[in-house]
Length: 157
Image 1 (cartoon, one colour):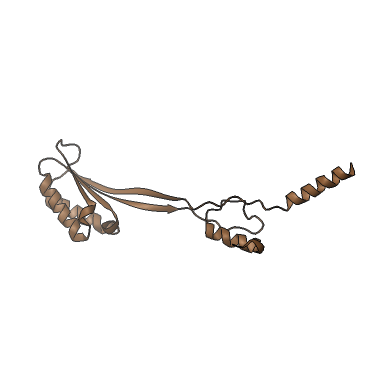
Image 2 (cartoon, helix red, strand yellow; image 1 turned 180 degrees about the horizontal axis):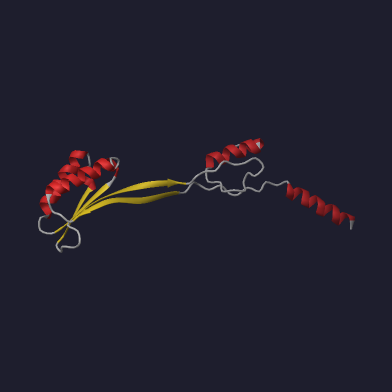
């Protein structure tokens, strides 16, 4: 009986001293498309040019990073598209990033200009706390290795 109690106490002591560390994993990254757009019902080149200038001035980062889509419904589409394309190229948009769609049916809008940019959302890496290492989400491998070497310097990588 005495040997059983000693072995239970010894087993509990050994298990209690072991590190409870989760397997580290890499950081997760999400790529989210964000679309900025405006629609016009008028087909005047002057009005489209004015609105496009206002749109570019309001969102200057879209000029170099976004994919542009111009949709025009109606019969005057080619002239409006060429005007808008020329204006975007003068603003600094690459020609390969401009796509044109022409609709034969006239819907609720006549002209739609949309710019889609892909934003990256990274996982937030929380700082580990002394005494609670390995209990939370270990998303950052560099930080994980640093903490592992500080907590257990004999196991440093």
